[in-house]
Amino acid sequence: MNARGALFRVSVALAAALALAGGVRALRPMPDVSESLYLFGTMVEIEIHGVDDATARAAIAAVDAHLETLHRDWHAWRPGELESLNAAIAAGAPFTVDAPMAAVLTQGRALACASDGLFDPAIGALVEAWGFHADTLPEGDPPPAAEIARLVAAHPRMTDLTISGREVRSSNPAVQLDLGAYAKGAALDLAEADLRAAGITDAVLNAGGGVQVMGRHGARPWRVAIRDPFAWGVVAALELQPGESLHTSGNYERYLEAGGLRFSHILDPRSGRPVTDIVSVSVLAQNGALADAAATALSVAGAKDWPRIAAQMGVENVLMITGAGEIFATPAMRARLAPVGGDFPAPVSLVDLPKVSAPRCD
Ligand code: AMP
Ligand code: MG
Image (cartoon, rainbow, N blue to C red; front, side, top):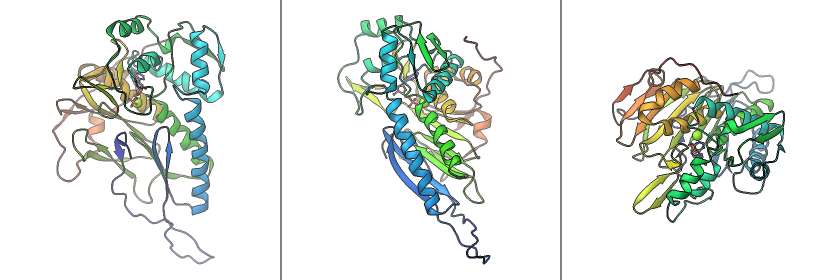
């Protein structure tokens, strides 16, 4: 697993599924079925509980095919639907997308609005300028300040998009879409629906930095851990309830290394520059795209502003680790965390979220 595997399952209890075999009330444990697939530029681990092998493998094959299609359609820099849409936007032309793309863009637009544009998938040109449109870590110098200033001054925003049915148009040709900050969460939401359609009720999907659970692991909830960004180990473990997603954004995952400095792949759309202060943000929510987008937005918001942005986005469960190693959590998140092997790496400071009303963007 690559460095984006910020979340990984620890100790899942060996719960046994009860099966009725041949009319005899025999208690036969049904083994879990798990497969690792390389999708979305990362390892996706799918583990299914409580069904026979053939049912599980067929469900995994359906997810595999679907995620491969999404990866191609949503890719930010390889030929595919998103690249065609970006070309149309640059040319000032409307473009008709397929229904899943219209849905993910509509959700991304609403999430960008709620985050005050700190999460904004319209900043693809900035992401590219920093060298992050590549499968490997970028090398070389940061982009010249004048180029950053030009890209920021063009103010590309999701709210520049008008999505009517499946037709997308942008009032701003500087919009270039890069769904990287929430595509994984959105894709896991769709994969969950695929598994459900295939008759699966209990499963965990784990895709470097994002995990989504369905149902339970036998008698117990699924258990996951949040990786320690400073050391090889975990910050805490927690049990995920049916339908929950946990996404972590980390500075340490992808970066440009230049002049002895590391530049994060998470950019602040206001300055066009990488975030510096926050090392890792984990968000737990009922929806994968929301958790993923919020983890990115709160990394940008930083130590001062994240409680307001979290409240605006409607997420209650947040864990933040700063560059100084401080750990902050909302009371709701703190109540879910269990230390692993002793104590938390640092005291967990509680932060209440303010009462705010969500911004409106029409
Ligand atoms: P994540 O790991 O979920 O935080 O997503 C980071 C990826 O999202 C980057 O590699 C970029 O492709 C893209 N990105 C970077 N900064 C932002 C931002 N402020 N808003 C939206 N997408 C971003
Ligand atoms: Mg994200």
